[in-house]
Length: 126
Image (cartoon, rainbow, N blue to C red; front, side, top):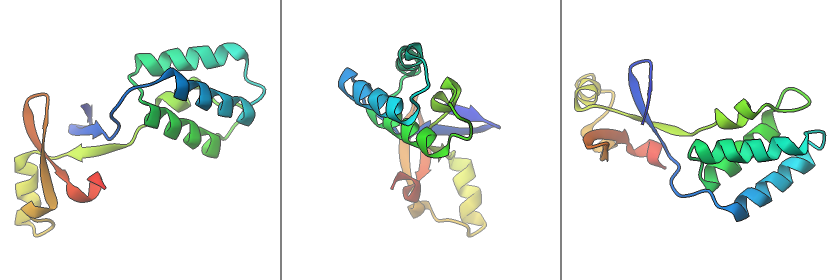
């Protein structure tokens, strides 16, 4: 769970980071950014493992940086800061939206995170 500006979010990624997928993704990175030193790939892979990346998150992060890197070479932070998250709503937040006719309770699905029940927009789960 991630807290940002008093709101809570959770990543959409689940699973594990496998050596096989890491090898494939690092090979793609070498093609996209051939001037990066070889030590870059080991450090990036280690940081991704320590940050709990999954195969899908790593692949998406690398694709994002390949598509959006503004300088000749990317920084490790560009990869590590990538995530896709969905907002977690408290019952009170959902009640306010429903009262304002901005949503209905049917628009949300319950999810338990760290022992606490939140609501997530069904449209965000797609």
